[in-house]
Image (cartoon, rainbow over all chains, first blue to last red):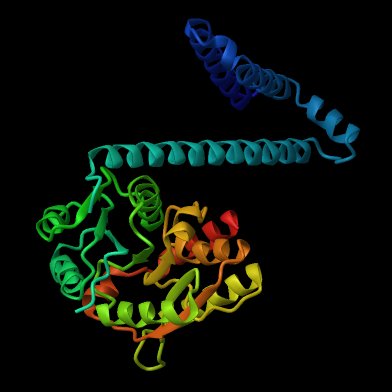
Length: 114
Length: 226
């Protein structure tokens, strides 16, 4: 196993332990379960691909892409795009809530008659 | 002097302490006594100046943008604006003269439109070239989105029938609200008339106005909200 593989695996295992600890400590763990499950699956997939690079070649061939590294690249782009959309949606949602709050505060303090 | 007691003039303000007193003073001098200043998180003395000029003041604790200010005004009008028949919007940076407002108000009796827009004239050689180009681009975009041509989609000088103002469902928080108001108006089938008004560029208004760098945001907001 190369140094890159060992470093990546150590990072991923550390990250997983950190996430798992947070998940178990959280009182809202049922709400976050689905998101965390996806995150956990991604980490397991990453660990498998780093440990056994042949898996990516097999998957690349299976999906008709050819090279394993291309398969990983396409999947990464897809995941990053979905993540960016989800974050953008959350940001807009937060902005709308802040705006409504600011409006309520200003209306509560204002005069009713010009 | 005529009294415009059935008019509410909404003045969105963001750090306009340098000119606000003269803007509000000239409005009251011409009979527009009902003024609603929506302070959008100013850090200067705009709020105190507006209060001194006897305007009703709504103050945002943080800056939301022009659209956010107009939405707050819309909410206030729907809650407390029962006695008004018309709502005018008038920029707080001194870009408009009250004579411009009087000019467009003069069209109400004759045409009774739902929305009147003060369309600024962008004269080549007098207006900055980037503003002319941007204004034309915005007009083209609005034309593509709603099929109608408007000379100036970004003007802050408007007069609405009150019910029209409170029922327009614009959602943009930033500068794109000006174009969105037109889009929503066309969608709802409101009659919209543009009245040409002179454009006045002072160093102050040029510094305060929309920056070219804002325009990507304006166009993308507009496409997002259309």
